[in-house]
Amino acid sequence: MTKNLTPVRHKMHVKKGDTVQVIAGSDKGKVGEVLQTFPKTNKVLVKGVNIKTKHVKPQQEGESGQITTIEVPIHSSNVMLYSTKQKVASRVCYTFNAEGRKVRMLKKTGEVLD
Image (tube, rainbow, N blue to C red):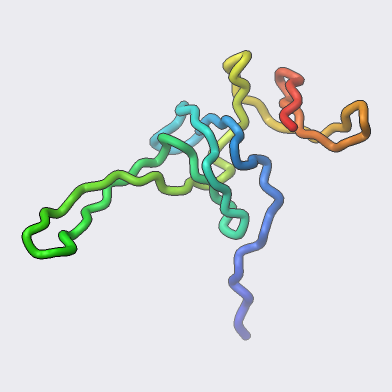
């Protein structure tokens, strides 16, 4: 009997445009903006983080090859939301604002994100 190996879609704690700090891996401590989220694989693309080099072959005769750098997605569990005002990373909690709308809030600072 085979198991279904499709990844489970989780509700992610970060959204596109959020400022996050990397808390694990070789880029630990770096702060950047989330450029794209991938909910199927639970990964995020952060600006200036996890940069890899790619060797590009020449396409036409006489053209020289290139070495380009690209940002590669990292797992969302390795990033934490970051407060630019107080320069601190914090966990996120969900609360309701005055209009009764559900919003994300940083636990350490009490800063409302949405």
